[in-house]
Image 1 (cartoon, rainbow, N blue to C red):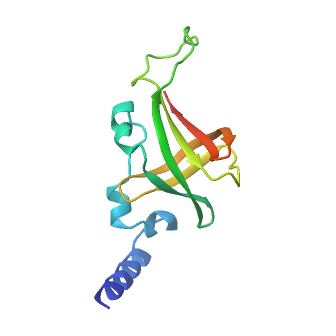
Image 2 (image 1 turned 30 degrees about the vertical axis):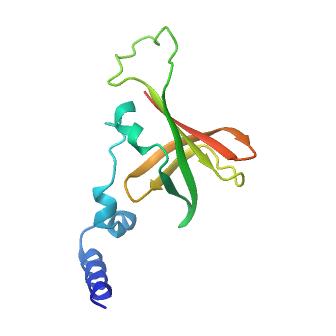
Length: 140
């Protein structure tokens, strides 16, 4: 009962706050604590997340599970494009295994787990077999 009351008080406080984005207002403190900064993620910081099962928000609250199955270096073309800067980190890719159906279109999704949350992760479907559909997120 105390938890329900505390939750109601938090919701009331959030409604009265100056949050401009209702999605941001609803995030729990645990979600904010586990939120990873994708700009600072590296191969080494992502490696401990292998085998983590994430809830992926697909449409208006609907979710599906995806498991991070691999974190691997990503090879870039040998010759950098004109005017490109030196990368701030070694390129790498996250590989997720999702259900066979549906195949999600490439776009940004929010990933949630007990240990890590990644908002706006851009994934692309890259393969499919009897186990499910594989997705890739590349960091350069």
